[in-house]
Length: 603
Image 1 (cartoon, helix red, strand yellow):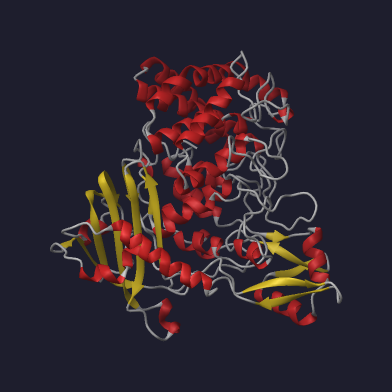
Image 2 (image 1 turned 120 degrees about the vertical axis):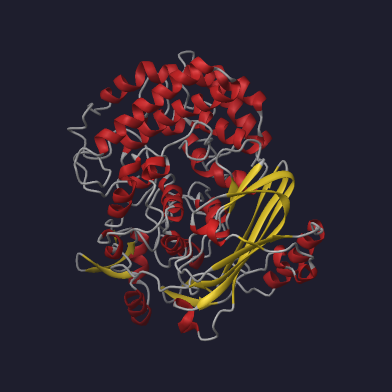
């Protein structure tokens, strides 16, 4: 990346706000974006119109202005990038100078929305009660989703988010009157969405004439705490009624016409292919793959993992077939594509905007992210979540870099039965190790065990190990494994002579599994403190605050379970939407509110 974050580096090369909103959490996880994003924000400030409107791109280029509310504003999601990015920048880097520099501009943007948003939406045919709204009107919304897009929701939610962002910044700067006004603005649009999307009485959080097929669905409103607390669990439950569908894309249909009968039978048997109007077609899945666009992909994974359905989030991300990362890899992708479907002419195969799930992998699969209320990356949230079955995944690790140093975590199953058929039922041990750098802090949150037999202990190292040497050693070992090509095992190749696709069994470097430096053999000599029994705190869902150090947690007698099947690859999950009990994560609805210091759930 040079100078501006663009959509794709070889074609459009445009600094779109929507792409930035979608991918910036992942970018700030992987890289130090402090200077880069500060420059990006100031570009937007320079391009702001005199009436307060922000543009769709950081430098106005007269692109897609039709999709906004008029008077120079870009599409509301895209134009909200400056305040949203300013808040995320504060959470990661603690740059109060940037808050002060951009404050007046963001206030002017909010004043613009206050003056023109409602009338602008009416001009675009969004009536106040959505009586005539049946889905997408003017707007870009959850761009490049497989589903139809709900553009009213994204327009209005990002207007709300702009209010929250200005309130957050005013709170940090001590500007009380602006904070109060901005919170009132945000509450107005939060309430508007809530009242309209509960109006149909179906508890599916959809617009009045909706049929629960648009995106973002309830996942966006659950993640951002728009859904009222007492309704959270029933809306989450009804979300599992959503299904996938077959896909009529040209490249996918051509592919099925150019494979052997043997390969086709295999794809049918695996559920990847089914009939569409009498012809074989690939299908996109709601619960075993992706259908979401650039925004909802992050919301869906986060909501599932945060609300006790991490195993379903894992199944989405680790699914196979059309509209999954596996589908991209089987077609030799080394970077993310612009779309979930193959495109030989229009869409890019080097594009970051669908890569939002990368940050979820670190935050939920491994279990390290910035605490939602931290600034300057001072405090990390250690919240590892585990699959039901060891057949899904058996270990994970991640590093979250900050100005304070690297936070790191790794976990693995131990005492797994040799007989893999018992990976759905055995009692096993989970060992977790994590590192909090000097002058930093951590918050520990563990998932609730399903068995009362599970015992959890915590201990810390008496001396912090030499992290630099450990990382270097682990990296060398990992590079050797990559050179041995122990990663993704096959690809689809095209025989030009026979005009047929065939499956080539050939392992790649990409996807090679490696051990975390936190489980390097040299750490077996670590001198530890005595163990503290934290079983009771875990069962009560009590977070624990921790200081700098190297820690180890052992969960003994963790019960593995069989994964929920649902009704097939493009089906739904009746085991959940017919259930009267969604588990221990759905018992605290009254606390389900956004808080002024929470940078993560602003939008």
